[in-house]
Image (tube, rainbow, N blue to C red; front, side, top):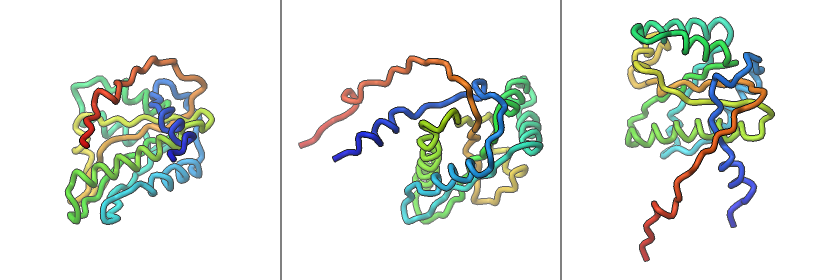
Length: 181
């Protein structure tokens, strides 16, 4: 039988946008616990392709400056504000193993991030949001990534006092299930 409590937790998962964060800092131990949960994501042939680069304090400013340089035509005010309100910025990275199709390694890394998100459900006002800025592939040098590594996006992590109610209407899954007997 399916665990109803776990199903409820999965359905309760939501994005909390950096604009809803309070600037409060989380302990590194909380971040480590989230990343430990991420590390338990499934991967074909146990390639475990994910790895994370965590930015807080002054290093967040350096990352924000670098992203701003990569997008010179865009106003940098928004990215700087998101970074300022966030406790930590986690660069979601992938190391290609060449043992399995590349899309499977992307999927595994996304499942690791989903584990982070599910860990935040009922976490006493800790939220997160995955975003992929334009030109993220150009962060490779700044992040000191190897040839077989890439950054898939940023996970903004922060504390919120309240989140705005959003009326999120999910599609009817029955419309997208085709049963074959």
